[in-house]
Image 1 (cartoon, rainbow, N blue to C red):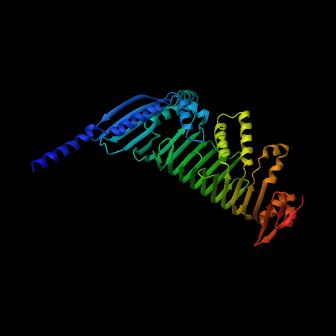
Image 2: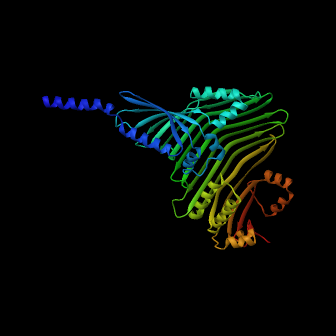
Image 3: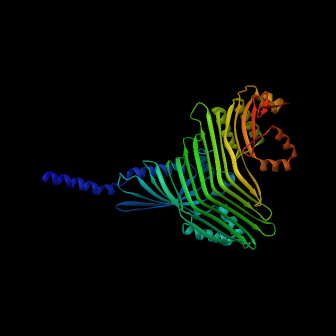
Length: 460
């Protein structure tokens, strides 16, 4: 009995000492990450630690001392390079970070609040000269942590979730413009490293921007935004986004009032380079699209777009990807020529374009002119041609000799007639059309030598 009591006492004492010993795993990880940031342009301006029995709290203020080094570090993880003007705006920015973690070694959860404390000196000077009241508002906004990212991060499992603090701000600019902006219900979750996550999901309940000056007005709002992305690498990924409702209104009584409204907007894109050849897919759709102005009203319903590129040479595709990323920030004539040669190389390897569907159910103009809709499906095969570069130098039309096309195009009679009315030459195609269920149908086939429409050969 005595031995059991002694053993239990040792166990209890050990458990009691665990918080005192501290969470070495998190401490070591934090030290490693801070050293990594320091090596890429961030330095600690201020720091403090509040150690309790159960939890430890740390506060850091990071100064972005070398924004170029930091931007170069971020750019290595993405094709979309951060623009140079953003780089200049980041120089000298101060970011606050509050951390809290458990002192028990087996708890690997970390809670963070990240928020800006100061703008860059360049932005600060510009605001103080051009918009002194706005600058004061920004200072007050930062003091109350107006922009705050909260995150819960499990270091061991590499999972995270969090939210962006709701924003509802109103400013008056020097010219009298009243600006109101809002962000509500922004949340996110993901897996992997924070700089380059392997998956990321986000939601925004509502985002608004309202600018008003005298009689002119701009309104922008997005409701129920959702996105989901997975990343295997920079060239193998899948991303999708959905917006329940999108509204943009520009009111200029002296000119016009334009309102754009779209609902159930969906966009997705994916790229896969894990197989022998590369493949890309792109899809988009909307349920309703309304555009109205003082002179024109357009109502469109059920648009869909679904295409895929396959059998793409991976080496040539990767070369173009890298050149495109480079061109976004450092464009030059030499780079443009290099891209042109790279695109020609890619085309010379051949590829297949599959258009599963491009369609519009209905479009109505000015509430009276119903043009109905159209649909298109197509398969286009571009054959390999080692001499493509020399051939298109003689004539760009040489590329057509490497193509096989099989397309089914259906267009409503009202839409076809409207096109003919504005472009009479299009009327020539009517003799090749077939009428099926009140639609003008064109089955177009091209095999590099012969062009047929509904089995009728079109001579040169």
